[in-house]
Amino acid sequence: MRLSPTFFRSNAALPQGQLSEPERGEAGADSEQWIRELAGGGPDVNPELTGSAKFAVYDEMRKTDPTIKSLLWIPSLAIRGANWGLEPRDEREGLDRLLADFVAANLGLEGEDGWLDLSWSKLTQQGLEEMVWGCMLEELVWGEIRSWRDADGDEHLVRPLARLAPRLPATVSKFERATDGAIAQVTQQLPNTRPIPGSKLSYLVFEQEAGRWDGVSLLRPAWGSWRIKKALLVAAGIGWDRFAMGLPVIWHPETPEGEERAKQIGRNVRSHERAYVHFPVPSGGSKADSEWALEILNAAATLADPTPLIKLLSDQQAEAGLLNFMRLGLGETGARATAEAQANPFYLACEAIADDLRRERMRQVIRRLIEVNFGAEAAAAHCPRLTVSRIVPRDLETIARALGLLSTAGFAFTDRAATDDVRELVGFPKLPRSLEEQGISRARLQQILSSLGLDSQTFAKIVAALPEEVGLARNRAEGGPLPIGNGAGPA
Figure 1: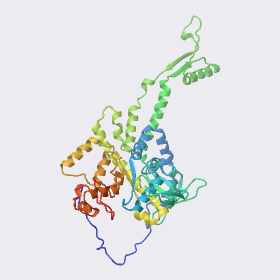
Figure 2: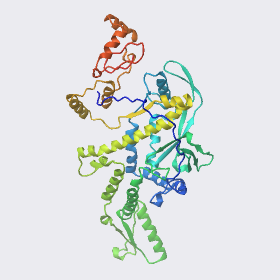
Figure 3: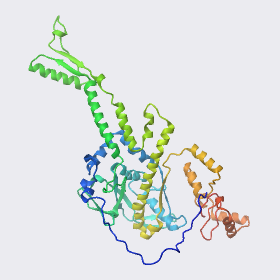
Figure 4: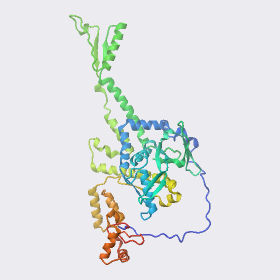
């Protein structure tokens, strides 16, 4: 399917001459130095969330509030459950395929188990800790040199990554940048640690803000609702504990012994589910004639119901993460169409977070892995592409209806890229990229061509003369027969 014309770029008209040297380094600053290093973190409008103090608050929020847990867990599950893949920069280049295979073997992509201490899914979850803290730092820990055999059976000595070790922002005491703005080193406020150079760090930021290295957490907008909700739950718990069980009132003789005994009786009644009190009545008398009496005052009916306010605060917490659609069924009313409309921004946010994580994994992990083992030139020209897809749930009925309308309008889904995109939408694997993957050998193809009285050159001319919309992928491998089939790759 071709939606736009192809444009060719010519370098012949590039300007020539002596290039001017720009001034290097930073002349200004995004904030004062003391603000950037304030107590291990950036400033906040609320003193309780300034510096490293906020990390303890965020930790309490995620561990004690189920709404906050879902605020973090739902997007994390969507991104971890997405289809993560690794593609060579150019399928036709042997070096590109080799580098992609090596990275996949080390990191655990494309069905490989991986050599890291964590699976790719767990590694993704670790990177998404940036949503909790505002940023996440990981130290690249290199393993010992080992032997690795590629798909062709050739053996290579490589130095793999052994671990992306988490370095929590709460442990950082000093975050230093070089004159060009790159990370120079990070110092932790922990014993037996050394400054970590920037070349050994992977640095992820959830929401960047000028003047602070620690970013802004996803939990920051939910903090106000969480604080009120916590106080409300504590107050409601105290109220129900005090009044729902009743308040014992004891009449006793006005003596020190009677007062002490009455206090003991009151404590026992309040704290023990099987406690009881027995006061004998004088012979021939009544309750009024007794020196002792007990009455339980119950004020439970006067307590305000905290449920509506707690629900409102939970809704505000969910709104901080665009999770309104998840709470529509918790009220008296709810509409599926409304939930679907509100879910769209959430999944757009998940796609943006996943794409940002994908890019940073390529820039800070995969590229460095190739630089260490194959050199900077190979990393610049042949670095494989990390991909992520299938984050948004697919409605097959809607997809089928859309494909039908597009087909009626004249759109054809016969070229390789369009076919793969449609197959991905409905959850099918991509088409095989070579005849060998389809179970057709070169010898078998040569035999078929010979039986038709065709040689490779004649067949190549026939295929080359066909229009693009036929759905054949041209083979650019020199000297080989051209493949046939809907979107088949080079033989």
